[in-house]
Length: 138
Image 1 (cartoon, helix red, strand yellow):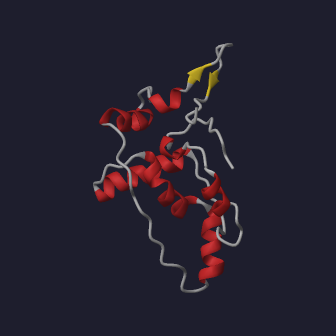
Image 2 (cartoon, rainbow, N blue to C red):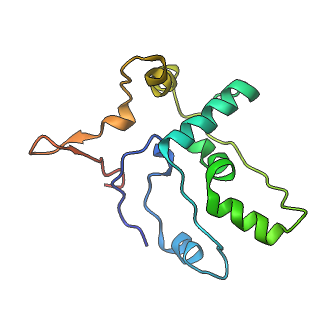
């Protein structure tokens, strides 16, 4: 069970504690075959793809599933092994528009040469001046 979360990510909608019941499902190897991860850059690339090709604005958390399908090699290997020659039909739900134009612009400002100022990436300053993650559970 995950009781507190302390991380810096643009996918802030996924920064949440996991309760007893969800953890019992997630940690059960009979029910969940794998847990996959992607980088911040992969999340941004998936977000850019959705915005440019689908003309849909979504928050970074909403495209994490798409980023896994596109970039996670372990997931892709699983599809090749289990799907054999036919592969899998994969559906990805894009849900979540909890963002602002300023936040989205800040995510992509670095690519344009600007210095991005994104609230979720700033974190908090620790007592010694170090950058620390915000505990969103507490």
